[in-house]
Amino acid sequence: MHPKVAPDVIFGQRDEGFQPLVDYDESGNGGKSCLAHWDYRDPRGLLCLVEELLYIEYQKKLVEKVDDARLKFEISTVLAKEGIEVSLVSSTGRSDEVKFAVPLLDLDLKMMVPGCPWKLPQKIHLQAIFPVSSSYLSVPSAPGLKLTSTPDLKSFFSVDGVKLPAWVDGMCMAEYVPTLEEDLKLQVVDASASIGCRRRFIEALAPAFGRPLEADPIFCRKATVLSISGIFTFLVHFVIPLQFPQQQPILTLQSCQHCNSQGIPITSSPNNSYPWSPRWEVTEMVDRIYDYLADECQNFKKLCSDGFPQAK
Image 1 (spheres, rainbow, N blue to C red):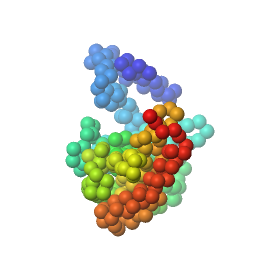
Image 2: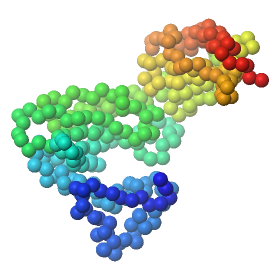
Image 3: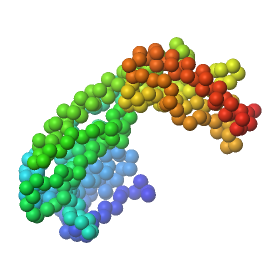
Image 4: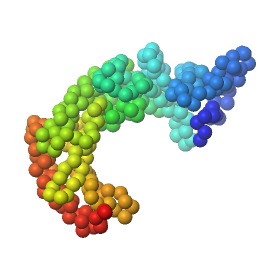
């Protein structure tokens, strides 16, 4: 809970014999350890510590000793891939598991987003979980498969919506990963093109609503416009999904004249139940939203006026 202090490192009972920092100190290199010069402002601090511990290499050696023919084959075929990590996981009441973390796409994702603010490389990994079995199975079950990514990448591309290719009986990861990477590359390219679609939608708001007060200039995921109906003034917040235009923007209205009892401006519930077609031109999309809001703002105005006193 104190980020300015170097972290404690605790290993499980299975790793009692793993004491790399003791060996590091006894060799006379203790003063060179990143723990001896901990800098909480360095975003790579924890990564440097993990690399110094050599725990990744230690886990590889543990996995290589596992008595499982299938896993031995997987290890022999995929461990040569740069950046791959493996770990042996033991759980009470169930068989051990081996987890693989396989880096995907040898692409500089930052170069696909002009003006991108990412300071660190963004990565996508395939997590594959294999149960350890000493008995021979003619048709082994498919491993547990899941895509993971660095958190900042979600503003550009969400791995949660990726449909993984089917794992065919008898397949190994050396066969599966190239197919997955081909599919994933196409989807990442589409995600890059989608930024242009969202930008054109935001630009199309100006003729109908006036120039947006705020807009996300990098990923084009959000925009806010000021609208007036008679004497009623309100904001319209647009949240534009990654799957635009297949999925329509979510609209939220916010009154500029009404607050609740806590002094917070009244807002409507998020709404995407208005007419929409991904085949329309962006100008028609905006026109349809404008027409819809012409009626919807009256309902919102009544909600604000009836439910809460007008702010003075």
